[in-house]
Amino acid sequence: MKAQLRTPADIGTAIRACREAMGLNQAELARLAGVGRQWLIQMEKGKPTAQIEPILKTFEALNLKLMALHEVEREQENDLTANPITAEINSIIETLADNGRRK
Image 1 (cartoon, helix red, strand yellow):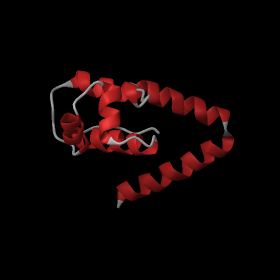
Image 2: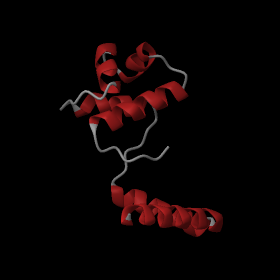
Image 3: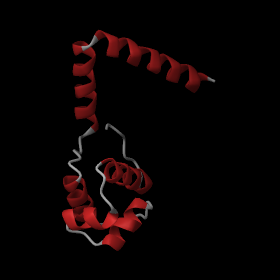
Image 4: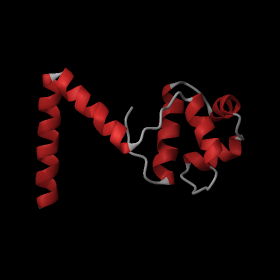
């Protein structure tokens, strides 16, 4: 799963989606991540927080990888050169997105 996480709500949505995809309930993930269940509940709701360590522990428990934007772009470029069908699909998506922004 690749997603741009720009807000606390984005992070909460990603955590919840990955937790559910792994078949974990909140208590199980909290235990694996070493965080409190109440903290996890608030995080999944998108509550803003300045605590980065519990977020990183939760990502680690979910086997999520944080990447800098330039790393994501480099990985996408590598994907494009490896698969011409993916390149064509991405080109179509970009064209549609560009057309949507012009309106």
